[in-house]
Image (cartoon, rainbow, N blue to C red; front, top):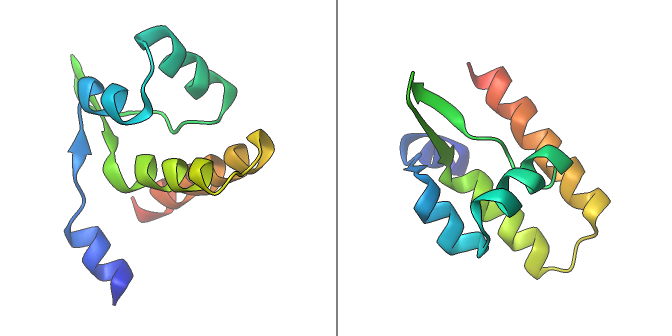
Amino acid sequence: IQTERRAMATKLLKFHDVASRVTGSRSSIYARIKAGTLPPPIRISSQSAAWVEHEIEAVLRAQIAGKSGEDLKNIVSDLVRQRQQAA
């Protein structure tokens, strides 16, 4: 039931929203994406991208819990896999 609620309440975040939550510059955010410790954005049009809010929140919760960089990579990998399976 909680998964259904989450799917119904999916919110997309633009870059400035993500930057304010993860406190990073554009280059540091994209470096984290390249490193696999932050989920990549989804393409919402040919000129626009956004991040899935619950994915960003999951990464932040893991950081707060003190998870290692390798743990973050596994979390991000799982989130991207779930995203692909939902499509």
